[in-house]
Every structure is written in C-alpha cells, then in structure tokens.
Amino acid sequence: MTSTRSGGVPANHAQKLDRGTLLACCLAIGVAQMGVSLAAPLLGVIQRDLGASAAALAWIPAAFILPTAILELNFGVLGDMFGRKRLLVWGGVLIFAGDVVAGTSGTLTQLIAGQAIAGLGAAAIFPTSLAMLVSATPAREDRARAVSYWAVSLAFGAMIAPLIGGFAAEHFGWGWSFAVPAALGLVTAAVSALVIVDSRHPAGRGLDWPGQITIAVSLLALLYAVIQGSVDGFATPTIIAAFVIAITAGILFVVSERRARTPMLDLNLFRTPSFAAAAAIGLLAMFGFIGTAYALSVKLEAILHVGPLQAALPFALIQAVPLLLTPLLPRLLMRIAARTLLVTGLLALAIGQFWMAQLPGDSTSLLAMTGPILLLGTGFITMFTALTAVAVGAVDIDYAGMASAVTSLVRETGQSLGPAIVSAVAFGVAGATLTSSLSDGSLPPDVASVATGVNEQGGPLAVANADLGPVSDVVAPLARSALELGLDTSIYVCVGASVLAALIALVIPGGIPRSPEDPPFVRNQQETDMTAHPSRPSPRKAEL
Image (cartoon, one colour):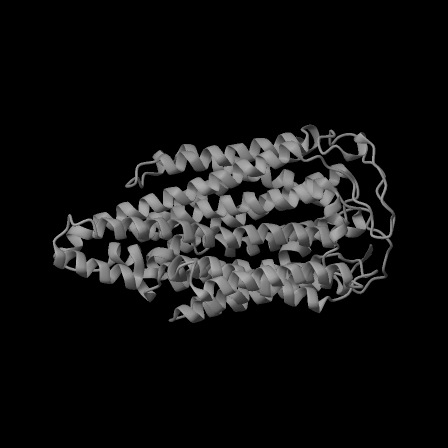
C-alpha cells in the first residue's frame, strides 16, 4: 500500500489513521447513503404527481442503487491505481449534479436519470471510503473502531434522508427533497479535497473492461427482467430473453475474470469460506432489509396515503436505533465472535420483518410499528457492522480495495434487488388476487368491466387510486386488500432471506485468503474458524 499527503512524499504504509481522513470518509459515506433512503417517503407523491406505474416506482430507488452495484468494482480499482482521495472528491460532485437533475425534474425519465447520476457518485464513495479506512488501520483494534464509525455514519445518513425528504415534500414540493443532499455533495467534495490523506495500491491493478461490460449487462438485464416481469408476465419472450442475457453475461463475467491479467474481481478471494459467506450474507440481508423498507413505503404512501413526513418517521426511527448503539459497536466487535453478532443481527431482522407483516393492514400508527422498527434497526446495525468487519478483515491489507469493492458490490446488488423482487412478488400476488375478485361474479358486470380494464392497464395500484366515481367505492377496497396481501407476502420473502443468511453464518467456517500467487495449502482450525475471538492476535496473512 502507498499512502501520501496531498503534495507530499509517498510513504510505504500509513502509521495511524488521520482524523481528517476519518472525518471525510464518514461524511462521504453518510451523504452517499442518503440517496438510498431519500426516495422512500416520496414514492406516493411522485406516483400521484407523475403518474408512475408500479414498475416505475421500483425503478426510482433502483436507478440510484444500480450504478453502485455495477461500477463499484472498477471504482475500487481506480482508487487503487490513481488514489482514493480524488474518487471521494468526484463522488461528491456527481451526487451534487445528480440531485440537481432529479430535483428539477418534471418527468419520470429525468428523475430516474438524476438518480442514476447521483448513484455514480455513491458508487465511487462506497468502496473508496471503506478501503481508505481499512488500508490505514492494520491494527485490529483501530480497524474495528474505524469500521464502527463508518457504519454509524452510514446509518445516520440513512436516518436523516427520509426526514429531509418528507419535510421538504410536505412543505415545498418533492423536488426540494434533493436540495440538501445536493449541497452536502459539494461539502463532501470540498472536505475530501482539503483534509484527506490519500492512499492507493496500484501494484497489479488495471482496468478490466471485459469484466466491467459483462457484469453491467448481467445486472441490468436481471433487474429489468425482475421489475418488468411483474408487469408484463415472466413467461413473455422479452422477459425470458432478459433472464437468458443476465445468466449468459454472468457466466461470461466469471470466465473473463478467470482469464484476465488484472481482474477487477479476484475470484480466489471466494476460496476463503469466511469471505464467500460474508458475500452471500450481505446479498441476502440487504435484500431483505431494503425490500421490507420498500414494501412499507408503498403501503404507507401509495395505499394508505399518509403524508410524506409521517411516512418518513418509521424509516428515520429504524436508522436512529444504530446511533444509540454507537458507543457499544467497537467493544462488541472486539469482545464478541463475528458469528454470534451476525446470527443475532440477522435473527433480529427476521423477527422484525415477520412482526411488520403481522400488523393490521390499515395500521399507520408509529406506536404500533415501534416493536418491529426497534428490531429492524438493531438487527441491521449489528449485522452490518459485523459483516463489514468480517469481509475486509478476511483478506490481506493489500487487498483492502478489492475486498471493500466486493463487499459494497454484494450489498448494493442486494439493495437493488430488494425493491425489484418485492415489487414483483407484491404486485404479482395483488394482481392475481384482484383479478380473481373481479371475475368471481360477485360484482355487477358494469363495475367489474370498468375495474378490469383499469387493472389490465395499470394494475391493482391504479384500481386502488383511480377516481372512478361510484365504481371506486366498490372496487378500491378490493384493490387495497389485494395490495396488502401482496406486500405482506413480499415481506415474508424478506424474512426467508434473513433466516437463510443466518443459517449461512452458522454453518460456513471462515479463514484467511491466500494471495493469487500462493499455491493451495491447508489451514489449521485456529486460522480458519470464523468464530475465532476477535481479540486474539491476528494470524499472519499471505504475502504478495
């Protein structure tokens, strides 16, 4: 690893994490994470203002998250090659530009484009900020503390974003919800430029265009197939072709990375059980967490029509819980085995998700949601902090950039799939349920005919919200009931993802990855057990 101060002389290794660097990285990750949850309380008002369909609603958060999933691996490489500092600076600039485009949009296309531009900025920040902290903290205690601050900053950004968005949408219009994140993007760029101690690890790194193209095609095709499949039908030729393209491009990505001279993803990392398990857990857990939040936002805003600020409160409270745990996180990482923290956090998520699905369909009371919200918040930060520490701690420090990028990749892929799969399940179940209700002969033929036409054009959400005069008095309750059933079913899918992740944490052992040049070797149990106590001396890691 090479570390330099701006304008200074390169040094071989950073001796201590600079406070300015820590501050800038925490600020950057907080601002980047704001974009993930900013749209949560806005979906209802955007749907009514722009006439967005059910599929379009899923694209609004996905447009921000997808660029981070597609580009994070290459941004990790770029940071290693050219310095991580400039990526944080440009990340802040892109967030500013994207939020300006989104905030001034009058069409759904411009809104999604703005979200995608801001997502590019977040893609630069997510892996870079973590890699910068990890590379400057070779000591386990220092790394645990830095990762904890990083995770809490992420949670703080996620907490304030829905409050800012909800308040602005309720008092000034939803476009103004993007004003504060835009300004903070500029602040992030300025602070990063002024105070960060730069770091990089260019040895053996290079841009991998075949890998970048194939992973981009695979993820885009997969997301399109999942989101549009819920509207067009998963058996339609277009959707089947999209799934085939996604699978084919995914296989080509693996082949490309195995043959590349400088792969952006070294597949040897996944030979270490702890790293492979952390990747799978991150994908499942973030899918379940974000999917549940998306289902709750659709229920509150698009079905029950609560105000943006009222809809923002549950999301803010979920992320406020981690802030209360700030003093405990470093100590937990040092004193409790990673497996214990992961399983505890994941089970708390599963219980909170199940409880949320059990709430009455017309419940909008924050008090009624307090129990599941506390479990979701506690489970998220416990799982996320332990998972991040496991993933980046499983590799040699010279692999910090790549490991951080992979950790971010699986997390953002899970987050992008959350709204997509929840939307597909929820609106698929709701559509089938409503179609059955409209065709069972219990409604007058003229009422059933009108409602069926609206349902075929816009789905259950359109039936629930359309002004059909006296017809709405009859069919809107049926549509809302179908939507509630669909959303509850989608949350149960999220419960299953959290439980599966907990099972992986229980049964998969961990270990120290070998570098690509090392021959295969057998590790002893002390070196490979994921449950080894974090306070014990770290085993010697493979040398490059």
